Length: 237
View 1 (cartoon, rainbow, N blue to C red):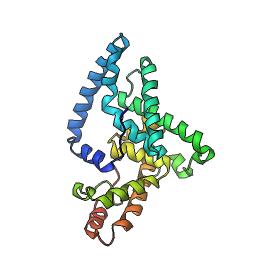
View 2: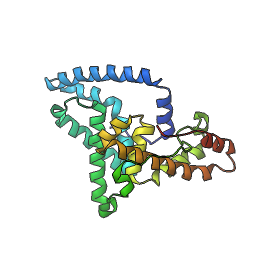
View 3: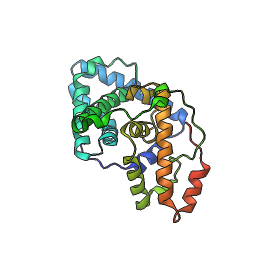
View 4: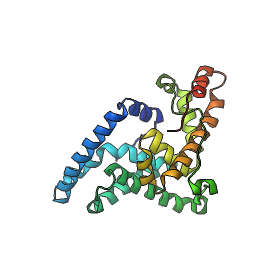
């Protein structure tokens, strides 16, 4: 597994360039069909095809692991272990979810297990009773995702994004990475994280709100134009 740096602006820009929802849906269907063929061939004995199967997701696995662990070496180890587990358990993949979602679920479970080993009781759920119900309806707020790509090229903003992300709880950070950075749907994010869609939406709302609160003070007064952009844009998807 190659060493990857965590670059949120690169991930977000790649998602923006990927096309509209219809194009992404068609591409996803095509990818799933192609992967089903490759998986069948691997299970039939063409084991060398496995690297071709997981290559598009290597960076995403690392980013997801890093979002929980906040440690490069541990994230790399988890990504490697997740790939090995996926290979050994490939015959258990039934296609009920996308392969990428199944692979991401393995990675998140591995990362959580590693975090428990290193931090023990600190990983106790940070979610309160409102999150457990999963029926909270957020109000409209400025959306941290809608930062112009030219602004993301600024070193100080990239650093602010990294610092803000690091201050989120692991539960909030992982859904933010999957939904807003990796571009997974709410349903896919729920499948990967193992919680219901209502809880994903609550965690996502709170993560976005935290990002807004953490980022806006760092942008003032030097980048008031960007503050205005953040204020005008609404979240909620």
